[in-house]
Amino acid sequence: MSHDSTAAPEAAARKLSGRRRKEIVAVLLFSGGPIFESSIPLSVFGIDRQDAGVPRYRLLVCAGEDGPLRTTGGLELTAPQGLEAISRAGTVVVPAWRSITSPPPEEALDALRRAHEEGARIVGLCTGAFVLAAAGLLDGRPATTHWMYAPTLAKRYPSVHVDPRELFVDDGDVLTSAGTAAGIDLCLHIVRTDHGNEAAGALARRLVVPPRRSGGQERYLDRSLPEEIGADPLAEVVAWALEHLHEQFDVETLAARAYMSRRTFDRRFRSLTGSAPLQWLITQRVLQAQRLLETSDYSVDEVAGRCGFRSPVALRGHFRRQLGSSPAAYRAAYRARRPQGERQPDPDTAAASRPLPPSDPPAALAPENAVPFQTRRTASPMPAGAASVPGQRSAP
Image 1: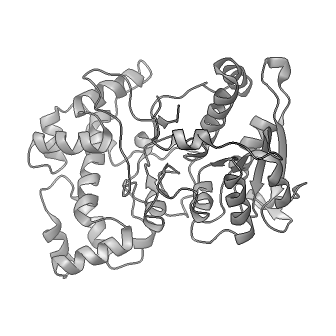
Image 2: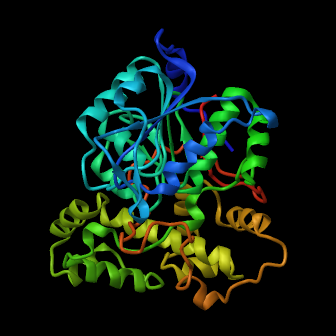
Image 3: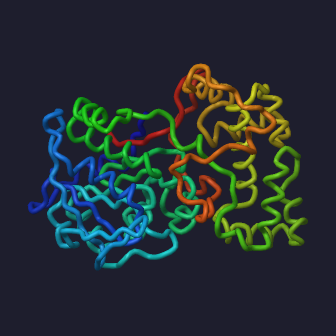
């Protein structure tokens, strides 16, 4: 599914400068970047598949800093081009950034800003969104990244409208994707935008992937602690809250457990997570309800009680605001997507045993709470029985 961005008309009006070519794609690599994400645009845009009906792009692999560039597994890469080559590209892709806590090189940020000013399309895959945000290219725009890092992106760049539910977001001349496989989704979307469905379908067949994936990241959202809070005294209070979501308690209860006033607790919690504690608590209850709707046969009323909501009405209101759907419609859509005959997990253990997708970042990188701190939601509620959920946003 798609989203019509309000920024798209302005973006579409911008034209490439004379020296840039639409068919040239520059991929900007940094030392420490993961090799999987780095290889995605190299494979999509760098291999000649004209025999399969896929129009050819011209690929420029550019080093964003001095080499050699070290990547996953200790491999060393030597990029054939430097930052100067970006000046010829109509599309610039940043596959991933090595660390969400360290600033990108200023020279690379200047090159991205200049490319954007000259009409180039700028793409950030996974944590590449942090590079685009550091360059100021996401200010006031919708964007996404891996759900683990969405809260950090929203906290660090509050002017960015971060939505952790999306597989990718197309805002016209600036595009971002979620982690790993979602980078393939976005690259296929770019080919589809440039050359149509037939070309994108032919490429998808070569890559042995679906031409379009339904749904978004919401099925992978995890309730682990944000890495900023892991060593803080508040971590114990947050861990208690996550273990007792089935009970009815409020923020005053959490503040009391932290031996703080409500005002001090609110301020401390917001400084650590980027979210108000009430917003965080409601989001965690909705995520828990989402899991129970997926993995159990409890009625909506029973789900509300098991997630600490005071009434089913409260669950329905918060669920619709957060996920753009009623609980009943969400369950119907989820079951419509699930492979026929898939075994239903035990409802009492499913929420606690939900595994992470195998391609997620290493466990050593402590996961973030996937709370949509800064989001712009434009999706309308789904009708009962609809078999679709939020997944992709794109400009016309």
